[in-house]
Structures are given as C-alpha cells and as structure tokens.
Length: 190
Ligand code: URA
Image (cartoon, rainbow, N blue to C red; front, side, top):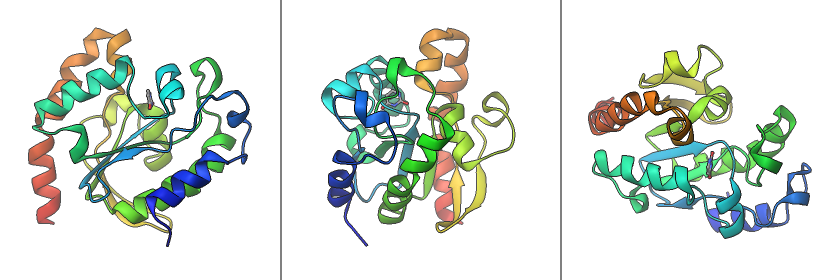
C-alpha cells in the first residue's frame, strides 16, 4: 500500500483523463491522515486550482465556519474531491473523469480509514449512494458496501457552494454540522 504523499505525487503527473490539460495545479487533498471524518467534494474550483489545495475559496471558507459548529478544525478532518484536477469553468465532472480518478480516492479512503465519509453535494454523494436525491438524503446516515472498501458509513450533506447560491439551504447545512458530533459518536459505538 502506498502513502498519501505517494498518491499526491501520482496525481501530479496523472493524465488518465483530459482535466490535467487545462488545470494549473493538481488538488490531491489534505488533512489529518488519521481522521475519523473524511469530506469528499466534487472537484477543485478556481482558487483551489491556483493553490493546489481543496476548499480554500468561498465554499472552503464556509466549510471552515461550518466545521466550527461541530467543534472541528480543518486539521481534524481529511478533505478530498472526486476529481483531482479542476473541470474547466467549474463544469460538472463527467462520469469518465470520475471513474478515471476513482483509484486515487479509493486508495486515500483505504489509508485514512475514516469512521464516516461526508459527501458534499450530489456529485460526491452519487459516487457512493446511487439512490435518492441530495435534498432527500442530506443529513441522513447511510451504511453501504463499497467494492474493495467494505462497509462504510456515509453522511451526505449539501455542498457549501450550493448554500452560497441558495441561502435557503443554510439551515439544513448548519443543522447537519451541529448534529455531526452525535452522528460520529453513534457510528463509533457500532
Ligand atoms: N468545491 C469542491 O467541490 N471542491 C473543492 O475543493 C472546492 C470547491
């Protein structure tokens, strides 16, 4: 098994899909390698592409504030994305791009062994929970068998960027974070 650093090195030179061609920097992910909670976003935006770090733009600032509602800091969790290079103009990642990038995320999950995975928004959710919509599934705990990874807990929530565009989603998003310590406690006990 490789290390998170080795995965980041591979992402740097990855040409498994075309996204690298227009991206400035790879964004492999960052955080606590022993995190109990792993957040998985969709893909890097403009600021992330500039800096090579996940969730450092507007959505990232909101994510940091939301983490504080759960008594968490960024350093407590691991943050990654389903695709590691920025989709041009922030378009949705295509299924072939998500599939090409999956081995990196799969390996990151294997190494970190989080107690719970929090997919941010519908694209990240769809990779793990192919049923229901994000509005129906957000804030609910799922336990699902994922090929090569075994049974994992998931707690999908709205993407912070969605709440920036649609403030009516804030309440559900904040509630999901306020409930996170209790959710974590429950899955740890199982
Ligand atoms: N949105 C995402 O899905 N990921 C990031 O890293 C930043 C914004």
